[in-house]
Image (cartoon, rainbow, N blue to C red; front, top):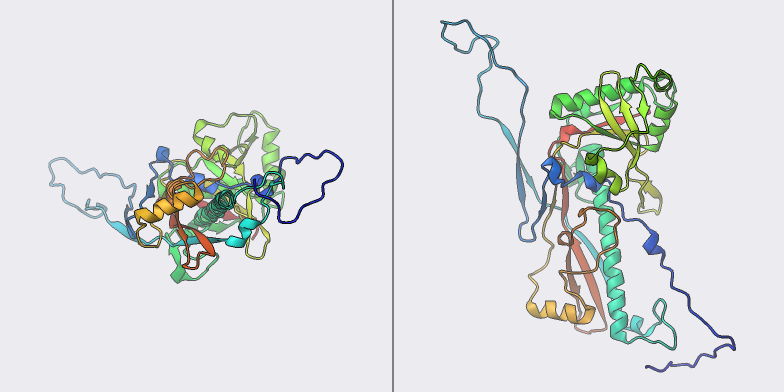
Amino acid sequence: MLGTPTPVTQGLYRRMMLDTFNEKDYVGVPTGFQSLFGRPESGSKSVFDAETLEFDIDIVRSNKRTAKLVQRGIMALPIEGHTAVVKEKYTERNLIPPLGEELSPIDANQLFLRTLGETSFQQKSRLEKMRELARELHVEQHRRFIRLFEYLASTVVLTGAMPAIFGTTEAGLTFDFKRKATHTFTAAASWLTAATNVLGDIDTGCELVRADANVTPDFALASAEAMAGILVNTKILANADNRQVNQGYLVTSNQVPQKFKHLIDNGFIFRGELMTPKGHSLHLFTYLDSYDNDSGTDTKYLTADKFIIGSTQARMDRVFGPGERLPMAASEESYYQEIFGFSPDAAPMPVIAGSGGIVNPQMFHHDVIVPDHKKSLMIRTQCAPIFVPTMVDAIVVIDITP
């Protein structure tokens, strides 16, 4: 046991140190919007490739034209009104994922200080302290990246584009996935006005998904403001009182189908099933998670005044590319494991409730930078994420406040 540099006078009473409290353990790691991407059930893909920098995807657009009828005995050549069947046209997208990087230093003098929960009678060695610090720093770096992923995924869903630099609005630093302009529209009148035709706006959005993406819209994400407008809407309330005409009636007692389990497991809150006058059925969810922006302001991932219509049938991919450093030598890997107590391929991850495999260690790349003076070292974690809304027109976003 190491001696204390300066003896500490202890009181006469017996002492006990209670379990330490770390508020970081209570700060949620959000994965709601991320749960919309990479789901095998919808044909979506998750790609983890540490050796490839550029990723290509070919997207074929289709239509719903019908075949034609002709009179018997007459040569069936294309005539007016007939469209010849030709080889499909496709769009090729070339993507280079942006680089995320977090650096966390450990200074030699830190290792002489008391760590969280350490007592003068149970001192830890400097190597033990360094390993504890390394674990804590790795977990915090991962937390920050997962919040970044959630921001990127939510931005893609809300705008149809993903910034290559956090918070940028420059076109040259944005991946624009070319969602149709009609799929983001403003409500005819504010949903906060009780007599507004909320259901009409929702039907319009559902029909856009059906017409342009060829899938059935089956869920919606409502901001707090949008949900408040739905709950006070006079037409919805009037139909709720007429049990024989179940149009526009918000059903809250039904069980949630299994296909929506991933939404609930990752933080979305079920509010009911909404039936529209035109026969569309949407399971309605809200989302409360938030992050601190650069100025420290609490910011919702689901932006205020937005109502999102989507489909669990839609393909939504995600790609995680390589980090940016020279290949790690075997001696570097061995040194990393010796000083930290774990491999760079098995760094500790934060606890995430019900993520369903959304967070995968292959998303991250770890290494350590040790200067020649050996007075400090730098833990580095990198990632290269891109969230690809392959069926980009399967989403409609309504701004509820004109």
